Length: 130
Length: 279
View 1 (tube, chains in turn brown, red):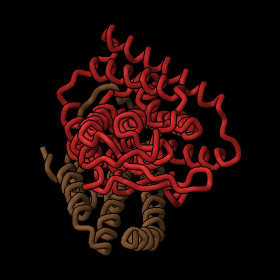
View 2: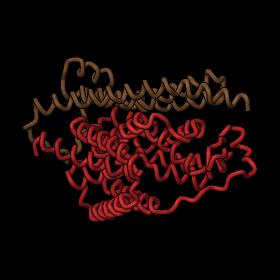
View 3: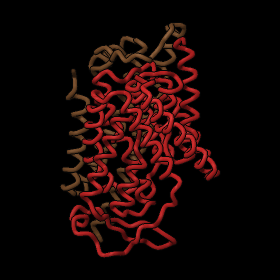
View 4: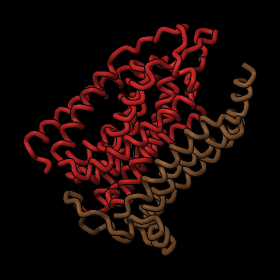
């Protein structure tokens, strides 16, 4: 019972910091998407669009490195995509925080579980550069 | 339609979807794909990609708004995330080779199931039984306050729950939804976790599951920023408004209306899939 109480204690301490960090990241991601969106509509708001046919996005909107470069250059679509990347990162960072919490608790079984989940998450972004 | 018109209309629709979804406790994700596909004639893959991003946004936004997860069990959530994330990647990879027609039909069936499950009264799992051996070994146990006293619980039938969670992840990756209904089914019915705990834990898991498939969608070029932008912002703002409104009044009638809406959308998705209108 003692170890469980200690676990819950560190849970709440880590938890407060985690919540604050994730709230900030979510807000920043939302702002970046909004900024990219406004830029897109100001520049190309009157362009006729249709999303009926699937063409697949170019590599500039697919690869993390190219998205970052495009966003830094102030292009609208890569900026939106960069905000989306930040949003995708939020739950990943959350798992990371939870894993660190288990390291503090010395619960190696769940450290391993967190590492597996992080590996699967990482493979989804890296492993499919077609 | 111009870029501005599309963004404005999709934003307004997503705002409404996020608001209602958050009031009904089902998440706005389930209505985003039907709205984009049936209403705006957006390609299913782009619609699913945009919906996935909005699901991550809703999940993160809800956690930011509440600041805590209530009775969620982090160990149960994290352990089952192995299954949901792996399933999500499978679902995302499957979606490339699955014809639009079939995605629409599967989507319709899941919508009908979600509608019926949201109307079913939740029953309390029997507590205080002898603990399950595997669950104890994996520490999938905990306690939660109920009527002033702490009730202990232990997960059961862990392999079955794990398998169902893989299925929930696959559906999430294939259809771009949080698949909360399947997650709650796996935890409530199969693993017999008390619903207060399972609902909170499911919310914690949805964002992580969606992130796994979103990564695949993004790197394969299925995330169109011009589609995802208005949808994500709309759902995010809508669900935050809904969460604020929910504190004041938990409306049962909204739940019923939402269930009817998603049942109708489900029927229309199946009809359009069968008649080949979406290909």
